[in-house]
Image (cartoon, rainbow, N blue to C red):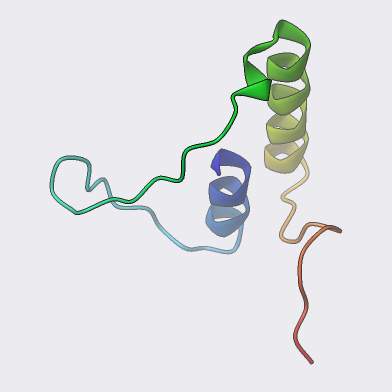
Length: 64
């Protein structure tokens, strides 16, 4: 989620803080990212995205 936010920011889309002001739905899921190596991997992905101004992911869905 945070890496996607970085890409949206790189596209010029500004964020707005709405915590405690909007209804939110969150799907329950396993927390595989809690392991230290997964946290480090996720941080590295976000760092790369920010430093290289990444706009798209190679794992996304593209509509013609």
